Length: 151
Length: 151
Image (tube, rainbow over all chains, first blue to last red):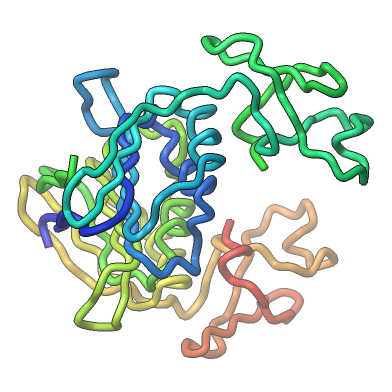
């Protein structure tokens, strides 16, 4: 067993150019855990022409929701999404950090109204994309650790 | 980008026949996280001749310690370890659940002496391999959740 055979997929999504080390966080965003029933392939820390090292995640029989893509953009802003249908790349695009992150991050301020029982979604304004800086629309607290604040 | 290219590795370890869904726990056992500096490949939920579905983990430039192998045996008792040296399988063996699990599991009993500041290692006796049942040598409490008790 010298090699892993990773064959082309019929339908699914390939997330390429993930910042090296972030693949496991992408799996978490996608809710991939013990109970997964479709094939998922991950390569971590492989050489890349673009940015030295990258990770790749390939998920069969699944296309991502806009919220999932927004979450991925926040932790891997150079990632590209390749949607595969019937063995061909049907769509390919680079993720984009949204101007407003709605319902995908939790505010770290326990007194923030978004952490009360009010029926409202969290909203963060993107103050800067590189380095990434976000501020809660409600309490104006800046978010310190994006990856661990993902909902 | 229809396929992931996964090439043979020069040196490293391929862990095959991992019970499907357990690959991410194997990565955790190996301490593979954001700071990884060698290539790691993972496939989750692929067809297997042996047991329907399996996961595979391939780690370059690394051989496993006996403790790491014992931990893997506890969560994936059918796993095989393939050690690759210079592009060839130098060793291949099936993991074995040890008769005594020493220093690899934490007792869930907060009053257990192994959770005090005494300089002793945890020890669990394997009462049954299938289903897996382990008992703390010190307080005799049975371990309920092996995966979350791994040190």
